[in-house]
Structures are given as C-alpha cells and as structure tokens.
Length: 186
View 1 (tube, rainbow, N blue to C red):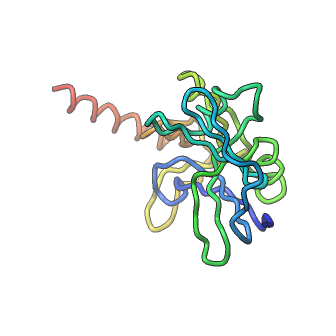
View 2 (cartoon, one colour):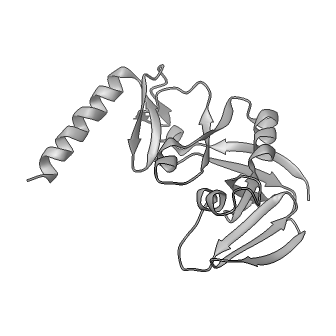
C-alpha cells in the first residue's frame, strides 16, 4: 500500500453546507497490521498500516473527537479521513490517521490547509481536529459553481459547519437568520 495523494474536500466551495474532510488516496486497500483489540466501554481499535480504525459497539456513532477523549494518553490523537482506494476511487470513511501524519500529508500535498482544534467540539467535551484553510475566502454561494471570494470578516455556523463570510454576506446571513427566528417563534 502506498499513499499517492491527499487533499481537502471542502463542500462549501460548491454551495453545500458540509464540513471539510481530508481525503487520502492509496493505490490499494491497506492490510491489517494490528488486529482488532477490545477495550473497556465497548470499544474496538485496530491499525491498517498508518491508518487507525475504531468502533464503539454501544450503539452510538463515534468519531475522532470521541476516540481522542477516550484514549488520550494511550493512543496518538487522530483525525477522521476518507480513504480513496485505487483507480476506481472507492471511498471508505471508517479510517482515521494520526494527527502528526495527517499534518505531514497536508504540508506535502495541500500546504494552504492546516488542522485546527474545533472550538465547537471542545465546548462539548470532544478533542476534535478539523481541516482549516489558512487564507479562506467568503463562501457565500453565487450559483453556477461560484462563491463570492472576497476577504472574510467572520465565520458563521450553519447546520453545524463554520464557514467564512465577507461583511456584505454576513449581514445578509444575519438578516435571513433573524427572519427565520421570527417566523418559527410564532
């Protein structure tokens, strides 16, 4: 297995409100290097080359933020990734990568991005590292595959995603949000 490429998939560039996700492309699906091991609290952890896989058998969906809290001090901090395999580009979202390795790949393939701690997740007790663009532009969707692109003045949270807006589009967002609040409070 060889890592061939890595990039950040940012749906806000295409008008979708969804979090940015790191994608790592490999030539073949990695083989298991450390078999699944059970841990207290219904957790299972395994390694596939440099990738970490984990699952919680308690019936709740978990991500890297949950893993990082549960296994702090025992395993390195991980980030959620999408694994893209082979020329057919099959995608697997059950893999994570240690933060240090993910940062190395970003420096090599996407130097305009970094990993930053999610303030929103931290307020909920999670330790979650998310992709963050170093010099973002306004992500207000203009349609026809185009965003505003002006210098942002703030980040707004919409459907759980923080995205940058310029002053003009921040005002429009706030006006629209106020109108929604007014109609839903009746």
